[in-house]
Length: 185
Image 1: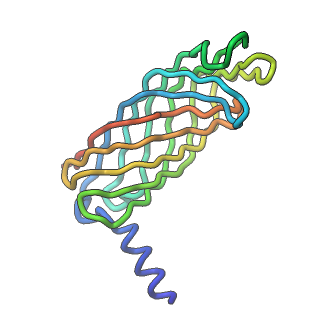
Image 2: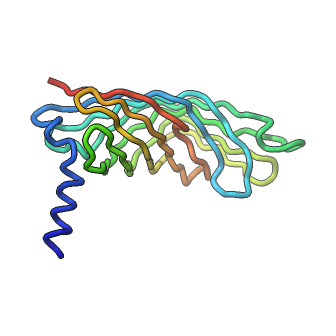
C-alpha cells in the first residue's frame, strides 16, 4: 500500500518532467481581474485587469515563483440599490511562490496551485455599513488556482487564480486567465 501511494505521488509530481529537463520554464498569463468581499452575505464586486509571470527552476518544475499586477475598479451597482459606499477595488503588485500539482495526463493537464505571497499596493472593501476595510502597503495573501494546461512544449494555460487577503476581508485575482508557457534554453 505504501509503495502504491509513493508511486502515485511520483507520477503526479513527475508529470511534465521530461519537458522541463535541464531548463527553466516561464509562463505568462493575462486576464480579467476580479475582486469581491469575503463572506456569502456581502455583495459587491470590482473588475479590471490581471497579469502574472511564473518561473520554474529546471529540476523543481512543480515549484513556481510568480510576480504580477492586479487592477480592479469598483462596480457601484453591484452592492445593491441605495448601498453607499460601494467600493471593492484593488491596485496591487504581488509576488510569491506556489506549488502546482498536475494530473499525469499528456497534452491536457488539469492543475491546482497553492502558495503564499505578498502584495504591495492598496485593497479596499467598503460595502455600506457592513464592511469598511482599506489597507495599503504590504499585505499577506494566499493564492489558490485551478486550471488546465493544453499542449506540451509550448503549452497554453487557461485557469483562474484567487488571492485571499485576510487583512482586508477580500478576495482578489483573475476571474479567468489565459497564457502561454515556454522552456528557457
